[in-house]
Image (cartoon, rainbow, N blue to C red; front, side):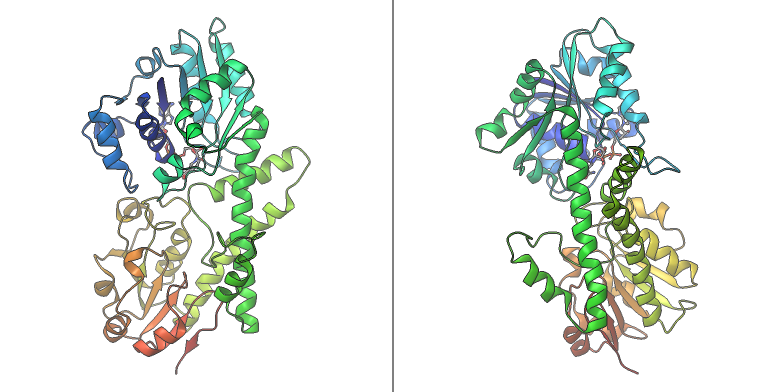
Amino acid sequence: MKIAMIGTGYVGLVSGVCFSDFGHEVVCVDKDPRKIEMLERGEVPIYEPGLDTLMAKNVEAGRLTFTLDLAKAIDGAEAVFIAVGTPTRRGDGHADLTYVMAAAEEIARAAKDYVVVVTKSTVPVGTNAGVREAVAAANPALDFDVASNPEFLREGAAIDDFMKPDRVVVGVETERAAKVMEGIYRPLYLRDFPIVTTDLESAEMIKYAANAFLATKITFINEIAALCEKVGADVKQVSKGMGMDERIGNKFLHAGPGYGGSCFPKDTKALARIGQEHASPISIVETVIKVNEDTKRRMIGKLLDLCGGSFNGKTVAVLGVTFKPNTDDMRDAPSLTIVPALVGGGAKVRVVDPQGRREGEQLLPGVDWATDPYRAAEGADLLVILTEWNEFRALDLTQLAGSMATARMADLRNIYSPEDARAAGFTGYESVGRSGFESA
Ligand SMILES: NC(=O)c1ccc[n+]([C@@H]2O[C@H](COP(=O)([O-])OP(=O)(O)OC[C@H]3O[C@@H](n4cnc5c(N)ncnc54)[C@H](O)[C@@H]3O)[C@@H](O)[C@H]2O)c1
């Protein structure tokens, strides 16, 4: 089958590469010439493990190409996927649909034969119907259907998630569109991965409800963590004991500095907004958004305590700035709240991140970038672990403590334990949801 993919970001590029690996002929389109030039040179504009190899394999096989020319890409395509960004609209929390609607109109103007216009971007309920209207208005003679196919991949594990999904959700209105979508996902269907076929609105809602639920689960354990600190419980043990209950499950139950990333913050805000617009508020999600902000601020309080009440004149080493490991994505990362608070408070901040520097250099002004944790920690007053990259999981804590001016650690991902820190010579240690210590 021939497929066009509009948008070569974290979702569009991974989807395009994986569809070509299924054996389809895929043309990926982006309006950013820099990205298309890189892709044509065989370079991947984002960091996603395994993507370079899979992309090269399918380009080599002649199934995967890149272009700036949307009309060329959709010529002869049975389906065209919209995988452009839907960021938070400034001011009101609503998803900004400018890019989706612009793509829909471009498709309408370029398409000649029957095509299924598939929205992969995360969009509010009713958007696919809006896409249908926009395409029909821009090209009344065009024979087409719309389909909603929200994406559930996780950055950092995107290829595996796409190739081995828990489920694929497809919202359609016609048999004909259902057949096209079935053909596209046939390789997964044959391997017994479940395909959930729904109406357009339910498919759109599934995506927001799923993300809001996961954000709620994280926020729930973060609030329990705050209480654990007050009552002397250990949130890691609490998570373990809770997660063993199959009705609860152990995923997304790790306490930390608050959720961030390209999806949860904007999707929770958009869902809350959709609820308000329909006079059916999702109060739980509204609270989750607020508690998550409080959680990030609570972390700043911990750092302040470890710095004796002021950041002024302190040197702080920050390990990890991306919103999670194995990605270079910095969108809404907790580091964007925490690092500016350190810099603004007068600290000298040194940052290390295996992939975060390219994005982070612009987003985190006033910091120094170090190449490894040991250099960052030399002479520092505080070490902060903000992202749990594997590189930070087995550090020589004794060496770190020995090289610091005051050996204090804020382990905001609970990678180490108070005992580890004390034994290595740290004189102060705080984590999330567990008792820390501070020696005089
Ligand atoms: N990032 C994730 O982990 C993830 C997971 C699931 C769903 N989603 C959803 O997928 C969508 C895309 O997210 P992303 O992270 O890939 O975004 P992104 O910002 O990384 O990529 C979007 C790309 O679309 C391109 N683009 C915009 N308008 C275009 C047009 N008219 N023609 C051609 N190219 C155009 C941009 O240049 C950009 O390269 C969003 O709705 C997001 O919520 C993202």
